[in-house]
Length: 240
Ligand code: ATP
Picture 1 (cartoon, rainbow, N blue to C red):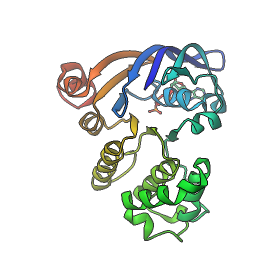
Picture 2: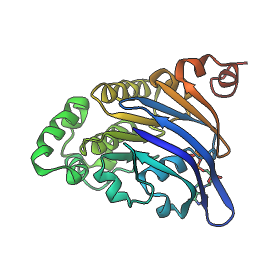
Picture 3: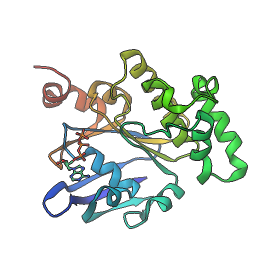
């Protein structure tokens, strides 16, 4: 579905953030992206969603194909139109708007006739949002805001969901719930590219995983195999 070839990116003149990264994301799969701080994980998601330029970055080589068509020269709106949705790190819900208004904003790219069904599916996925539709989004708990951020993206009925650190700053129980939701979303046919510091959670959920180290692809493969590898255990799973 998504094919990334020889992708390099930089910020300004001096900061090289990705160097020659290549991997594929098969249809309807979950691919985890692991790596320490500054490895280039967010840059990779920004490159796919077309938002790199908004952060002062640019691609310097390579390409990104969605179903065989290049998307790396498209603007963010055109990429949303192709049903690729990003949930950025830090959630970034519209804090002063209600839950309902946030969801409505997420549905703007969806055909009007499909919005009610998308909303019903999101509320089925996140019943808690249904109980808080009139609440100001900024007053939700961190976990609820993460659910709203994912729910808002799901209003666009994405084929590919790009998640940047969805477990960041959440309590263990909420992390577990977010994991269940990601599995459920994937079970309904949406592919997921999951950037996570929580490698244990990510490797449990994902079919495949890639590891970035200072902008380069260090490892790639089946998630269960990577979880069993000594390097991954030592570096990312807290093993010896
Ligand atoms: P983290 O988990 O800390 O967010 P990451 O793996 O997502 O890390 P990136 O945020 O993609 O890493 O950063 C990759 C490199 O690019 C780092 O050296 C970082 O300092 C730099 N970088 C990221 N965003 C910008 C920006 N907007 N302007 C300049 N440099 C940036």
